[in-house]
Every structure is written in C-alpha cells, then in structure tokens.
Figure 1 (cartoon, rainbow, N blue to C red):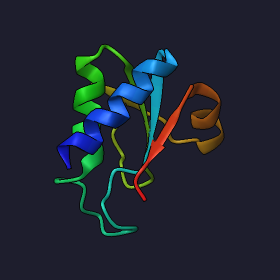
Figure 2: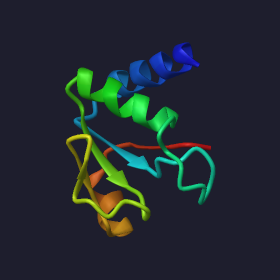
Figure 3: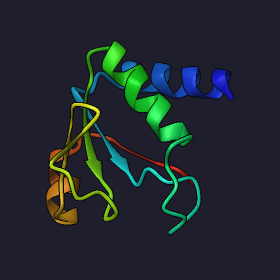
Figure 4: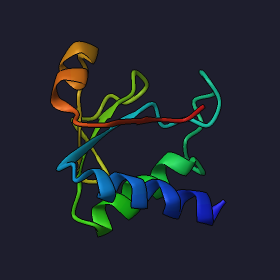
Length: 88
C-alpha cells in the first residue's frame, strides 16, 4: 500500500534520524523472496530523502545492496542504526 509507505517515510523524517536500519528484506520469513518486498520500496524512498540505510539480512552475502551497507553482525547493526524498520 503506497500510502502506508509514505506514512512510514514521513514518520522517519519527523524523527530526524540520519540512518535507518532495515531488518530482513523478504516478505515472508525464510521465503528467500525479496524481489517484490515492501522493504525494497522503502529503501528507495529513504534514499530519495537522502537518509542512509543499513541492512541486516542473513540471506544477503554481498557487502552492499542497492548502495546500502549490509551488516552481518546483528549487535553491530543494532548499535549503528538510529531507527530499525522491519516487515511484520
């Protein structure tokens, strides 16, 4: 839902954070499918707002994804992220 995504972006901007952590990209737990994930849209929308994005996702083996840093250590991800978004 596009209006929900816009609301999430508005709330992130209202908090004045410099970076946002994205926890897991896939739509369903352990589905391995993130191609049409709402998180991908949010990453793009955050980038448009010039908000840095950090990603924690055990299924990603790359060091970057969509120009975002992929962090392999969850504790480091928590420490480095000012706000964390996750898909329910």
